[in-house]
Length: 341
Ligand SMILES: [Zn+2]
Image: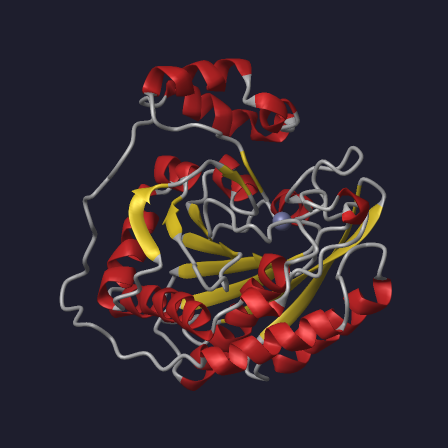
């Protein structure tokens, strides 16, 4: 993923940046986000501080006690990084990772592989469906994350390491780890609504050569035009010891109700990594969904941690507590939807 906004303090400056582009971050955005950009231009200028404080707190929703095992999630990170970088140059690690994710998904859930080719790269999205409530509910929540990792550590402070791949403990493995444990939780305690979990490939080679970010999710959306989940959440970079998740800009703009539900869950779960402040504008796997009108939000650490796109993105900066918070908040979100289906 990438962030688009360098500054967000003065509305006029931001409006100016939107128009002219924000250094190299803006000029490389693909035409595919033009719809979102257009919405952004029409939107209110960005200011500091709290935005959209209106919270959707479903009726009859006492704080749910949710048993999420951050320790096991941490082991999923360890296993994935043990395979090595999951970038296109490392097909064996990618095969091992896909196989591992599949092995962890409860047998009650259906798994489909969505194979695609984008910009000359072969990719695989892993689509898991938990449709226990299929006949009872028309609500479908999509949870997503990317399972690939970046080919080049182009943010490393050591320039001799910038051609090395990123191990992606945080940027890749952490989201997968949380979704695997969520799948297990949904198996043990099925909600009254349907839930899909999609592990997207080829999110993180954007701006390497002529590649874009979020290629796997874009291919998924384009090849499944009838796929219309009620709402969705993308999680990305969620294990850092100093985890800080503000309200991502495009999510606030295009999926405010979903975002409010997430923050209501964060309140209930007392998850203090979730900050009720405005974050950056991020290109991630939620964008292709937003472009076709599906309200999907992005939960991502911002400002990005120092390990982002460096060779330091290793498990030593990950925290069980951070994984636990994100897991509980997303599950709370699901069960709240479930209680109101
Ligand atoms: Zn990344």
